[in-house]
Image (cartoon, rainbow, N blue to C red; front, side):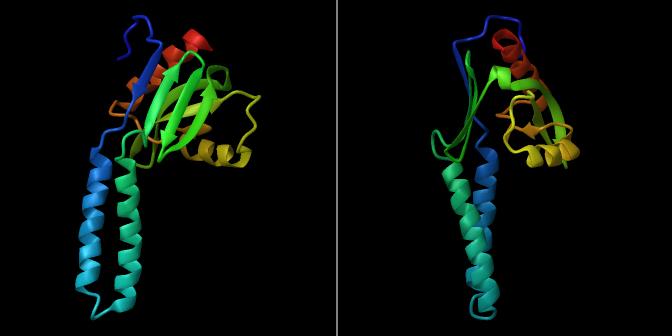
Length: 158
């Protein structure tokens, strides 16, 4: 995907459905377990069942069409996660790169000096990952490949 061919007018990347499906299945199993122990330990059952039902609901919402995606165009990139949209212009980004946060490989983002949003959170992120921020998903690609693709877009339109 890091080929040197011309860029399309719009590129739309969607995350793999496997993580939300796995979370939904595990949550359903734990809600069932909470129901089973409900007579013996009602406080644990209600608390655990409620938490895992909420996680299952979030996983189900993440599976809806259009809930999560990465949209690239000449103006910039748009990250949609659980229907919440964040947009950055290419001139707002200094670089993209592959990084790790714990065991999770992701794409890190460094913002330009003129971007002042969330300065404290950016310092924390820099300490954790070496970048100001990160994408929420790798959209079915290796982090290094997606970072290279985003750099190609940034260089072409930034």
